[in-house]
Image 1 (cartoon, rainbow, N blue to C red):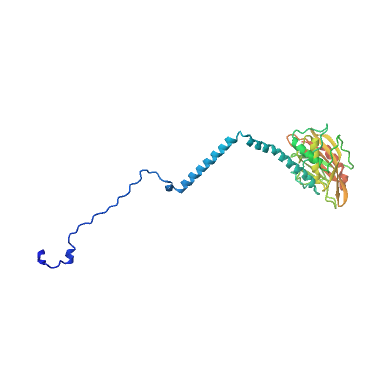
Image 2: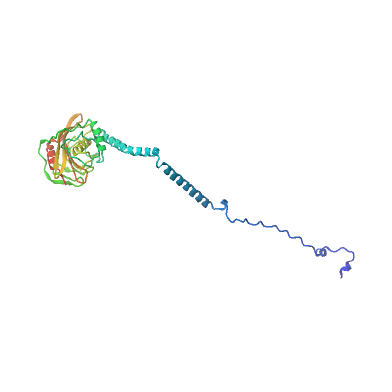
Length: 332
């Protein structure tokens, strides 16, 4: 059938759909060109990089400010004055602390001997050394002045006699001794008593010997040695005075001293100073005394050594042991 055969009839819809149509025009949107610069903005950087950059910049600013302040104030006298004042004030602070320590033994005397540690630094001094006093090169003038002021205010310890006074012979017989104790820590040797005296745990001293306990008494004889536990003074005499004041820590509370001897000695080949004294105190309402003595010995390349012995009147049969000790002390 040819196309003309349809006549004037309507064309079927499926045939009309196959008729040729004109294609629709293609619409294109132009893409914006990238910016000419390839550099990234602050918002494109990782946050850790931003934080590091800020920290570095702050550090540089602080260093710069500090350097500027140093350069500006280096020659400024107003700034230098406080520094010098602070430096000058340091010895005063040290001296004040020494003075506070000096008052400690006066308030802390104990009833039982041997309990106070060697670190007790109760400092005192004698009023002026006499011609027999032996100089001590390790002394500090500031320390000596502070110690002297503290000692002069201590009512328990009177000034030493101006002239030398020898240790008298005490009653009784000396205990048997076997050889000597060589205290290498302190640099001295002293008698090693047998039978009557007994070796005891040395701490806080370097060596210690004790008499037996007396029934009903809390105090007994004691013989010890140690490096001097107080500041060295200008002379051995003054240092011995300080050491005697320190020994009140090993007597009943409230004890006071009266001097019985003050003399230079020879401890082997070394010089020293001996002090003898009576210690007065009250126990259970009764007045009691102890005989005591100490030898301060100059030791090469060390602090002076102290040998200290005290015996209460309840054991006065042993008082002559004090003479034995003081005559036997030698530097190693």
